[in-house]
Each structure stands twice: as structure tokens, then as C-alpha cells.
Length: 117
Image (cartoon, rainbow, N blue to C red; front, side, top):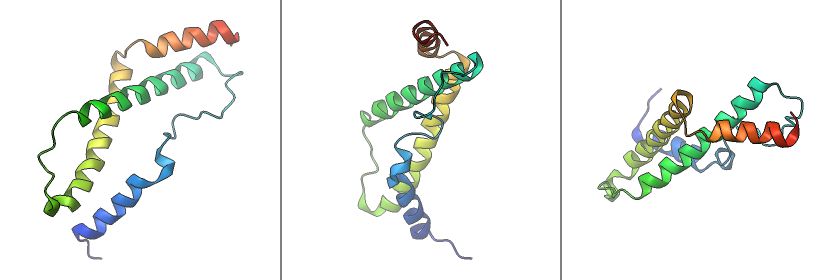
């Protein structure tokens, strides 16, 4: 099986444009958490904090100039965007697990207090 840069690029272009990526799978917004354990609730709060951080990091990256606007590099740019997004997601996940902003803890305490979970 032969791989060329154009076939890989088209595969990742379709992946990046997929509407299913709009909400991460880890954020299950339709699930009923009224009977969730404390650990499950905290995990969901951490997932939300990681998603929030990821969106902040992506917006910050948009403010940085991109020198690779050359049309001849278009196929490479798609791959770079894909790996940049994956890197940002991993940094956000690790940031939440290591120290975090405190958003997950605050959200957790608010849900416990308001919903008697």
C-alpha cells in the first residue's frame, strides 16, 4: 500500500472538518449525573476544565503569526494543524491533572452544594 502526502492530507482534512469533533467525547453533556459518585463527578469537572483550557490555548495560538502561509505548503499545513491540535489537547489534559486552574474543584463544590449530589 502506497502512501503519499496528498492522500494523508485529504484523510486528515476530512477528520478536522468532521462535526463530531465539535464536542469532545469525554464531555458527555447528555448524561444524568444525579447518581454519580464523587470520583465520577470530579472526573467530569476535570474534563470540562481540560476542554476549557484547550479552547483558551487554541485561541492564544491564533494570535501568533504563522509564517507557513505559502500555498505550496498547504498539504503539510493540514498535518501540522492536526498535530498542533493534538499537542494542545495533551497539554491541556496534563495541566488539569497536575495543577489546574481550580475551575474543576470550584465546579465540583458548586454542583455538590446546589444539587445535593
